Length: 463
Ligand code: ARG
Image 1 (cartoon, rainbow, N blue to C red):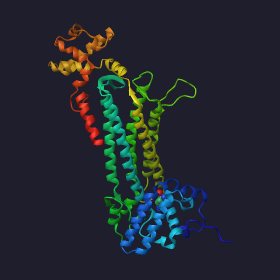
Image 2: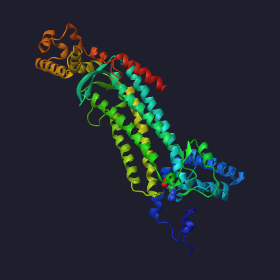
Image 3: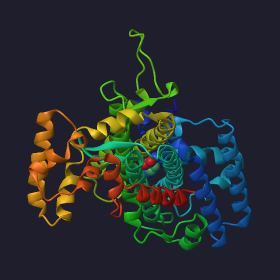
């Protein structure tokens, strides 16, 4: 009786035994890497055209392959394609189908390439595409933050350090801090796109090929900047996937910090903002509850994003050159990271839309905690005092106000005179929080003139 050997006709000839069931199960990556089908077909079509241009295959066969690949792309798009674990991954699933569609000429497509250069080419193309989508989503979020800031341009709140009231700032200035972070995330994505734009196709399994291929042609047609310079490096590094997840992690961390602010500001102990019901959920037991789950999800999912970066580092750190199957999990990690980040970006954008700052509360908090003590010290510096002396004087004044159980702006001129006699009547405005905010005219400071300039500048950049 003839033993049933490997289904897999690509490398089955070499084997004496049928693949172990559990190995076949875990070796297959098709459930994950089918997401690369567009990139795989794009790269295959360009590779095929290059083979024909170089007269390695005939134009007739090339045409047949290209039309077969387009047909397969359509089948996958229309969900008419049956992915099969028997054929391991997206590359072999498509190749197998190509044999069914155009017959044995399909065998010419894999000339001068390996799945090793194929997979990393597809993956780079996918990462470049996805980075552009992330950039768009960050842009939408920034525009929403600017909208919220402009709408609430006169709101004053305390800025914090150690979560203790520090100095008065504009709410818009606070929001613009996140705008700056997100703008840098876009810059990081641009850099990563640039760094990823080296074309590995044509590196073969690891050594290159003896066939007369044209790597500049495939590079140009696939919109890469240049071909990779070393075939072993090309098939075995995943630094671009790490860089992608690193940039995702930074962006996710920024989003998570913002989510944390929202959770604190929305708490019943702060009541600094309210959130529209559509971004809140209720409790199954406590009828009164409205919880900011949207922000909590953003904060929570960040853990997965950062962990996936860590996982790929651990996979890569002990691999000699060149390709190992360990690397196959790179795609699961990257896709999951990207999915979560996209959701976090969309959630945060809608959350920003749903936020209503509580002007009264924020103002009240800005007055509390002696937030203008530094302004008084700077006032004394303007009168010629050293900052260290001024700091002491101002601390004394805070102690007096604290003892009297009043805010700094409730002090009388004579109370202040007791601490320091180098003052004029104009000292009284120093304790006004709005005066404090508008006095911060240093570049990047919180004065309203600065903030409006920065809002307009960022808006122009993002439009
Ligand atoms: N599915 C594989 C991966 O993603 C493709 C590369 C297979 N190469 C190999 N030598 N088995 O890593």
